[in-house]
Image (tube, rainbow, N blue to C red; front, side, top):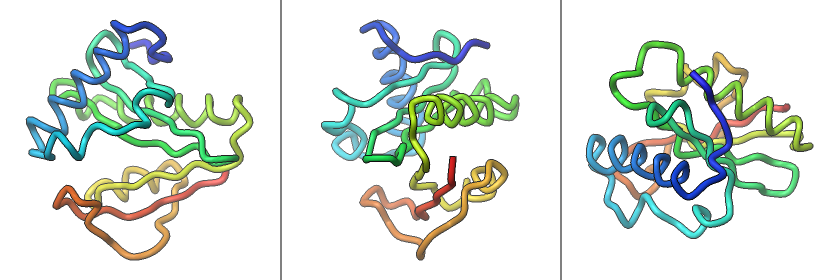
Length: 138
């Protein structure tokens, strides 16, 4: 399955549809918590036509990875790992020297397999779901 930068309106809409299904409908995150001003300026990535998504926000030399979502039908296939590897490779190619993300606590072991290290305590990001900040050198 191809993972690519969502460069058209249709591709970005597909990314947003995946986020709506996973975060708002499935995880019950309030809609106001899901959407932010970064959506207009960050890099969005799309897996397949509607299988998964993630975004990258530039913070100086740091690529802030977020909104990593895989549709239920594609979970357990390795797609999440492939999305992350694609984002990390692309971030390196764009000159970022570090990546960070705010992992839901259940997903910390997943990101640790990619070299991310937890930094700081667990916290509620406002969604009611506990998170941990994680970082990796690129």
